[in-house]
Image (cartoon, rainbow, N blue to C red):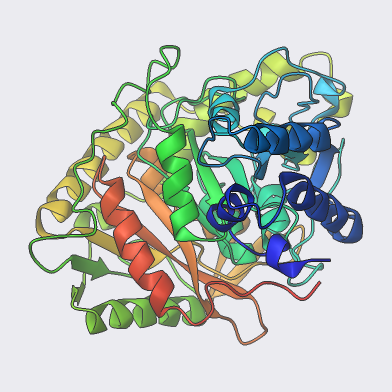
Length: 468
């Protein structure tokens, strides 16, 4: 199997196809063969697109005829099974939606196709995308390719496992609290959650709570994230949160007129963090200092005043519960365990809901103040490396916390809508990937992508892949 086709990034694959060093058919077939070889061990891919090879042949014919080529002409991509895909199963990880075939593509899927990319497959997720692990009653559990006894994270764990193992070069994911960044961290790939609303959520389900849901790309390289973001961002006239024009960017880009100002933290009210994860963040901060960034350890008082996980639980679950009750009514025997947990939660009082909204306001103000003095915030993606399946709780520094504590470092940026990127920068003592999270001010995506590209050059492990 041609490893140069399986582990090249999408940008390189597009170049190989455009220069006729490889055909789209060869690229797509290589990925289909890889899926056949490794997916039985991982269960990352849940639906193959029947017409992928035919689309690849058509792409080669367009190239041969001298037709117009998009930036991803002939390159395969995958999409989480929460994205509507015209004529292709979109079952949302639930028996309630078994056999569902949408008539139209989600905006993000349509934009990828418009750029010449070919939809190859749909990837696994927890039921309705609401959990930190990827498991459900319809398509089952996805395993981590670095250790099949561990989870690839959730809710985009199928997407991350597929990209990590060469089954897909580029994918579409979603993020309510951790789901773009956490799975990428757990499997050693890169992912990007832009500012809330930058990528329309049209044709992606669920949408509750709308202020927290984000869409974003997952890939093997920072340049692929930048390419995909440029294709996906911008209003579509249907998502009322997606209103900022694509060409608006308040970041520094690759040519700041002063050193990039980086602050880093591993605690500051976020709770306990694994020592190896903390050391990896510090190593990334030290590496940025060597290339001229102004780097200092920071704390953010707003994070210490209002616990983001508590705010998220009070706000999001109050809105999620009625949505779950509506869609699962009459299907209680088909619900996954986490869905049953959500529907059984006590209601949040109006007073607590209002207080939580005020807490989010303070959190936004605190980050606005932070970004007056800094361009970037560097911190962990997850508080521990990839964990065992069915995690219920774990202990750090003598403190026992619930499973959802893995997302205490990602939730703040869903509540506030700030852009955030995940990329590998280290390895745990037992061989699991460890990632760092790069955050910037609202609508400053170029700053994140610039700093991440620097870290990519500095990281000794960013492009490693599991031996499968």
